[in-house]
Structure formats: structure tokens, C-alpha cells
Length: 487
Image (cartoon, rainbow, N blue to C red; front, side, top):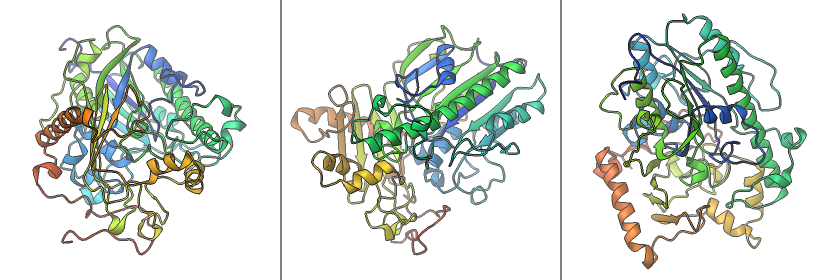
């Protein structure tokens, strides 16, 4: 381990490329038959591809908070909610690297959405945002930020002998999409792999095509960033990470603890630090593991409050028998329930099972059907508006589609258990069945042990305030409000 950790004389630079709302399945290297992701595939081919990588929360702000701090979201106070803040008391890896002499910056979507000032910050915790370079968007709803050229501008100001840490975050493939763009760019809807929790219909297939074109825009940005590193002679000594903050913006994906919401693509390239490149790792990792990884690679000790673990032993092709599960959580997403309350839940994902514990099963998981209690003023507001969502809601009474709609929009029990070898799409909850009683109990105990060890107040009995923290997002419903903590 010490042989590849950075020294004061030779420390690796770090480029994190982060898409916005992309599920694991949707890269070429991970098996999708349509999407073209040569940059991701190259990083995987020349580095290490992770088969079991999971976000810490399937919601933008909390996921990014965990990634930056190396801590689970239940340890981050307001940082566990979206449209909130990340209190300055929680150190981030870019801040620690900057103190150690790194040049630090970001472009596009960095930490957020939320507000910095209530948390005592004046600079985005991912690094000062560089946004001067703009370009004509390639399609409707595509960002005008020229991410790669902003990265180039950043590098121009960094001496060649100084290591850097840069966060390149795109807004793609976040909704909305330009409808019909997938077909316009020549993609065949007949080749789409429709996830099992969605209806196989032309509307859904076209929606998936549009989503895949936005992933390709992200990948082209990564390709340009790699070219810039090559042009400046910095590719060899840079750790390049390509991943996403959480899963796809479709029903029963984003803002849920099922795989299409939590399992993300992850490939890492580092010629000096990864042994036998081209491998895949089946170890279970969370995105929060990146923070201590970057610090250790730079020769720095991770702060003791970081509960995540460095991946450097996996880079060295060492066996890690402890990495057999990923832990995931949700608190308040967009607060689309009475008084802005969230849907608190925790999950543990292993090779064989997904176990979920829902702390408030009387609440609507996808947001209330009553739009008047949602900050976004839409029914089931935790799920982004989309043609797929509309199709499911309009056809809830149709045989076959009704069950899928219920899986996306309906209530859920306290405990959920999915056996993945028989049910990879996680459609059939086997919690409560006699033959799974011992497995369910063992998984529950293991999850709750982890929550206790890492100080989750929902288990340890401390103050539980996520429902009551301020909400700094745009409110389309002027009557919407957050519950006061004395209720």
C-alpha cells in the first residue's frame, strides 16, 4: 500500500467525472446494447471497473455530500437532505487536498442543489466553480456549460509540477430531455433493453432512447477531458474516475433504494496505482469510499470521522473479504408529502439480496398523490415528470401495467427483501415468507449493527431532524411548508 500512496514529491492529480442520474447498466462496458460510451469503456479497459458500486443516497445533494465527506448521509445533519446545505464542520476531500497544496476546482454541477451560506461556506465544497466557457447547446434542455474547456482553463493556471483535484460534473442526463432526440440521432427503439419495472411500450422505449443520448453527451465530455490531459502531459499521473451520483430519472429508480436508483457505473484509471489494469472488481463499494481513497493516494490520512474506506487495496488486486455489502439511505428528497416530510429508509445490498427497512411506511414513498402538499406541486412528486411516468399513471387500470404502477407509486411495508438470483429486477418482496425468516432477520441485524456503529440517530435514539430542516429549493406550491420540530 505504501508503495503506491503519494509522497510530497510525487502525488497523483485527481479528475472526477460525474454524470447526473445514470444507472449502472447504461454504459457499453456494462453491457448496454445501444449507448456508446467509449470514454467510460476506455477508463475501464485501462483501469478498474467496479461491478458493485452504489451511491450512498439516490438523491443528488445527499449523494454528493457523502462522496465529498466520506461519510454516510445519516452523519451529515442537513447534508442528508436535497435542497439543503452541507455544514462546514464536515470536512471534504477537496478542502483537505487544498490545504496539502493541491490546486482545486470544479465545473458544471458540483455539490448541490442547495445553499452554501446556511452551512457556513462561501465556496462550493467540491471546489470553486469555473463556468466562464459556454457553447451553443446541442439540443433542447442540454446545458450550455462547456465543461471540458472550463477544465482546460483551470489547468492553464496550474503549474505542471503541482497536483490538482478537479470535479467535472455535468447536468446530463438529468431531466428534462429533448423528446424524440434518440430517434433523431439514429437510435433504434427496438434495441432498447426495458428495465423489468417499466412497461414495454413505444413511449417508454423512446424515453429511454432520449436518456441514453444524454449519457453519450456526458461521455463525449469525458473523452475531451482525457484528450486535454494527454495534450498537457498529465494523463499518466492523474487518477481519473468516471461515475454518476445515482441512478436514472425514471419511476422506481432515482429517489428509491432499488438497484436502478442506487447502483452506478464506476471505472477508475491510474497507471501508477492500479495493478493488472483491465480487471473488474466485484467488491461492494459506495461512492463515499472515493474520499479516503483520494486522500490516501495523496499520502494523507483520512480524518477519523470518515466512515468510508479507501479502495487502494482493491487497486492492488488484494482480496477484501469485508467488502460484501453496500449501505444506502434516503431521507427527504423533494418533500412531496404533508408538511414537506421525507421517506426515511435504509438498505443493505449484498451479492444475493437487497434488504430495505422503511421507517415511516404510512407515508407515500414516491410522494403524495395530492399535489397540493408537494413543493413541486405535482402528484407523486419524488418522481420527475416524464413520458414514462405519465404513461404509467394513465394506464394504472390496465392489466399488467397496474402492478408496475403500484410498484412505482404505491405504499410499501416496513421491511422489503428481494432475492436477486431469482428476481434481479426486485419486483417480488419476499419479506415475511417463512422460508426467508432467518435471512431476513440476519440482514436486518447486520444493517442495524452498521447504523448503530456509525451513529444513525434513527437507530441510536438521537435527534431526528431531517423532516424539519429548511428547504432551499424552488417552490412551485406557495402553500407548501416544512413541519416544525415540535410536532
